Image (cartoon, rainbow, N blue to C red; front, side, top):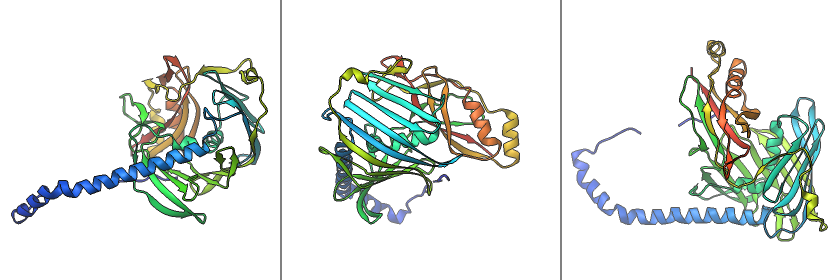
Length: 367
């Protein structure tokens, strides 16, 4: 996966000063329609997002008990394609649990009366399951921070379907950008240059594609499964560049018989933490630079640039679930991993209580 890259000062000649004055005097009248057009595009974009969210977000306050069963294929695994199942059972938006069951990996997690919980059979969550979680929640991509700007509305055709597309920035994901040799503590927060392009089916308003900046996965949605006034995609796909990484097919979305809510309580031995939609982000307290020998090895072989990673800052303030999104061969990737796994954070928090928070790390090794 590759990155993207980005006039000069000038002066009016004496002959153009008069013309510039006329243009300046008229500019408020000229700018008003342009500003109005931008506001109109913003409102149209926000309306598209709100419409899709109302249709596709399953865990809402007005949702009754339901179950969702999905068959999943994970491509590009060490042992080839891996197949498994995802299950979601909900009594309400505040009481639900989900389960991933795959060869060699299982995870049970949920929400019960304001408390999140989870239990895995392995220590770290493989990157494919991060992608799966993002893919299985179309509404996840529609959560934008307050003040996000919507770009111009464009009409496109996606897989033979007419779609309305918008570019939004920034996204709600937390980023940390750091650089080898920089001793200053880098902040964790919403990145102003993080962008996403959202495309919605023109006829239904459903989300059909999600494209982030170059290093991040891309998502596509196809078909429909209905449940009351909810409409969920039937086929969900995640791509890494042009390569299909995850594909899921909905097998069932149906009403669940009313059960004892206590049946959704977390089992014994799970990890638990308070739930809030927007926890306070973690803060880096101590950092370690990559080993000098690793940097020298990489630079001698011209192995430099930015390595993009996904990780969770745990309640212990350390890095967990570390995964490369953009892998650089040789010593560079190893040097970055060696450095960041020794970093110490003040963990993210909800009402002052530590909670695990996922962040993107973009670490640059200069030439």
